[in-house]
Length: 178
Image (tube, rainbow, N blue to C red; front, side):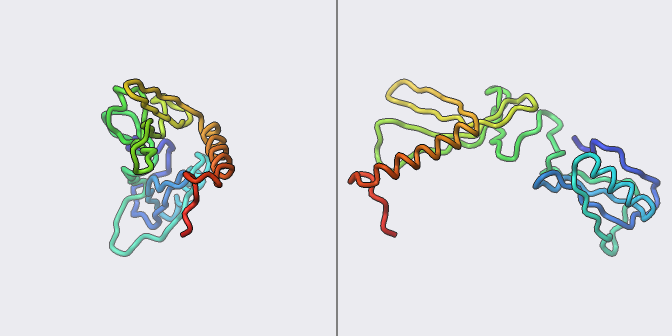
């Protein structure tokens, strides 16, 4: 998307206000308005569920009322040749995998282990689906991927910490003294 999904007032007169438009933690766009349209533009942005932060124009900057700049790194931006990627997506082979996926994080102790494991954040390409955690385990010649919801993953992390605390006395699981 290269424009805002909301209609803002515009008259083409010289802008006096720059409105930063945010969604969650993302600066998505700047909208430029004249003094007469600033309040209406802010109200339209807020009705659309985004935050609007008006700022006086910097000296020497000239934009017409109604001009919008969408940031390519914001949540409104998406490549013209494919689906929008979540900020954590590795962008490689999403179409072939049929899902977005972060870089894989190895579960490694730095020593040889009998099993190789890694984790990645993953999400279906269709809209409205929550991200999940993909745990891949390779044992010898066979491997398996298990996908857990974020809720299951959170509980799993609590249970692993609990078991690690219980095993603290085992000589192979002593906590570092640093």
